[in-house]
Length: 410
Image 1 (spheres, rainbow, N blue to C red):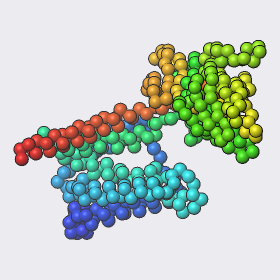
Image 2: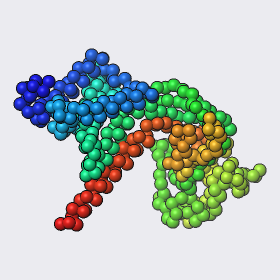
Image 3: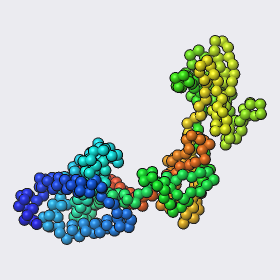
Image 4: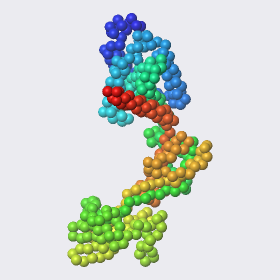
């Protein structure tokens, strides 16, 4: 093998040979992709992906430790081949970034070459596999024999290998589902949007309470003929409150009284009530041409008609404020027992290896929504990926520390 390689290139570790082999790998990947009619590489799932990764890691260690003087192994783990593979990964990533992914282009050649599924295709998989071999060998050669001076290299490159290999091997185990659950009900089934199907979860979610906090409402002028909304020139606070004033050409509106949660009594006069059922009411004074009149506006609800005021061909309308916070009070039940939790946006809860995120609700019903949408994510390989990142950070810290020490010594 050594003679063949040397006879072909003249220098087995040359950049010319490495570049040529890398191009051949990419071409071979596209040929395989074409033969497979555009189907990507089948990903192994747990526990076979973990077994494959363990065998692969042992193979790299044995190859690097047992054949480190072999010319082919030296070339496989050398810098020229590593740089060539990095350029190939960058090129394929550029293609994947420019060409829309996951969307059929309608072009038969594009589809058979897998250009719209670049990151799960054969060319990308083959190049990354070779890159893991190259990177792994370089790490093994720094570990054996062990020298403390190589620790920074081992942490940085070893962490990179672990993060990349774990991320790729664990991609098939990543689960991202949506749990729809209604207030007062329990649900243990979730929806996978990409596959348009329901799955059974290992736990159930009971929605005890769903609530929304809103910003203050806004008063606007609605033009029904042109179906457009006109904002007034507001002085003072931007949200509706007592003293709020807005001007439109020809008239001005001043809020005399504001009730954030109210319901009308038997005579139609709004009275303060609880937050759960009440809606915002604003008593406004409309001033135009030296005359004024007082009226009530309300935002309306699924049970109460919105209160508006007509001015010529326009309507004064009070829009509900946009959601500020929405949260779900849930009870989680599974093999680890029952747990009460509160979900909010950007405040996930971890339960039995799943991260639960407050995702959405019935936007048409607004704060009267009985439906909460919860996103559940399971990524069992994430700790391994984090371990790799922390090793990279430690390697970087050592790199800067060594640089500072060299600077101090002058």
